[in-house]
Image (cartoon, rainbow, N blue to C red; front, side, top):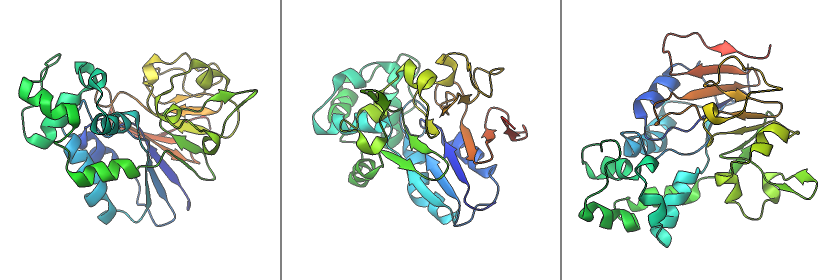
Length: 261
């Protein structure tokens, strides 16, 4: 089938899972598209490796069009580099120390480990990032759209009496950071595919397609959510459109499954 789109959820520094997921995709051609929903950094053991793979290795391995969206973690690091943001850097759950050490060569932190004073000084202004990585993060797309869906990291805002199209959103931070429950339950319109909010935290799919597995892709009436916890003890997921075939790293031997048909 020509013109397929393969949307990949939040990776969070898990290079091994990313390579495993991509190895399980069917052959792609120039009419296919790979959309990555953002959050390439933090938490997992190899943020630097993920970024290098996506920038330099993957383009030589596939003929598909590659689309990279900005996630809130890339956005947060840009804010750190530009004006500083200790509140993002400090909580160990954000995984910032793991990201820094992936570039500097340090060992991966233990749970709840804090940086040394020397490491904190480097994290405060993000000076461990190579300049070309900063440029790459700044160039990441805020959203993408094709005939199948709208793709955005977090969601869309409601204004007046309707949900805005991402092209209408003035404060684009909303596209990266929102976790409005109403968006998942009440939005109706063209299909929107997001990451950002871990599927296990979302409400039951009252109008959805996969209610039997709360950790799997969340598929509501008009929103599909693909953050299945990669980098946080979960797995990485890819959704193929328009077929709605799901591929994931939770079970490498598991046959890709189609939902809602």
